[in-house]
Image (cartoon, rainbow, N blue to C red; front, top):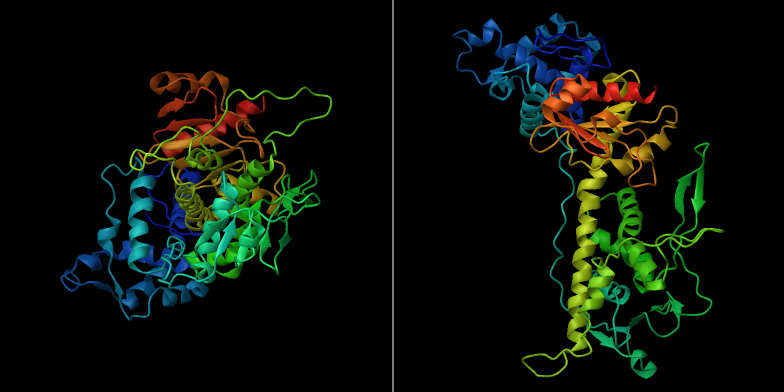
Length: 499
């Protein structure tokens, strides 16, 4: 039986749902997943009521494709929605009658199992798309650069062995109209470089007005904007960057926002500014650090140097380095050493593709995800009274960085959020432990030791929870067949952590 509570929260309860927290979680997930307004909530409820009411099956409406507006008015009054909320129906549609979407609300045959997955994640998403109310789920799409004649401007950089910083810097410049398809001159001869319109990574000068962007000077100390962090009392502090800007960092400082705007012209300035910082944190800073020789793990006083257990040569800087002609490499076609300038062009394009891949992820996935995480954090007490469990609509949604930021923004300190619930691509519910901020593998509260490495029926017996599917050997993630089971796993893990 559909029911409602007073504003501002609106819950739809069915006899197949077992607990109030389950009801809240399912409707909360619907709201997060679709970005729906309250108008959509009411529209959803009224459509369901109408499609299951006697009037809907009568001969008068047997072939009708609309809901009479008078029926909607009676419906919202009869179920106790405050009269002040009636106006939300007006914003749901401008038509006298509202289209019937009863076909969107067919309940699964096993309503007591996976109602959340089958019902609130698919049919409601379709409903909001059909009614053009779903804005959050339509993130910006990367634009194709408009055709532009080759620029007459010449970009200068050094000859010889190339690195990722100047290869990436050249690509960045070529994305803005002034330097679109500009030719590159690679030389160390000052007289040759003087003929270039813009020079990077060579020449011993950094001067933006003169379009000189080198970083090899003795007194050079240019860095990106300080990082924003928080102290123990949650006060904002600015931390100086560990690395100086390389050639690509200097180009990004002055032209990065223009590049972002070229590919995402519809972004607001605030969104461009946010993407600009995130791109440096996630992509550009590593190129700067590797080029300027900054170790990823800083040395500590009175401690022996940390010995790396493995070496990673798969990063962008390593891949660019391998494109340089080898000392003994011979081109089979020319029977000569490969042309380093041609290889430089390949390296520059590869840098650009990596840049675009990260930018696309940030703008089209990471930034839109923030609103979902924000809603989950605000509504965490509706999932569990502890406030230490949140529920997300999808496991593919990037949430960690946003969660840390929001905890600082809302001054959430005691208790911190410990577990995140979501469904994977196969529909299984997952429970994942939140890692300690700034650390990759240390959790705030791992799943109980006795669960770790145990699966299926054996895990059900050990945990005493129906539907358990697995628990990772490290205790950072587990699974259950239902939302109720995953929520119970999180609650038991919290209890276990307090012992």
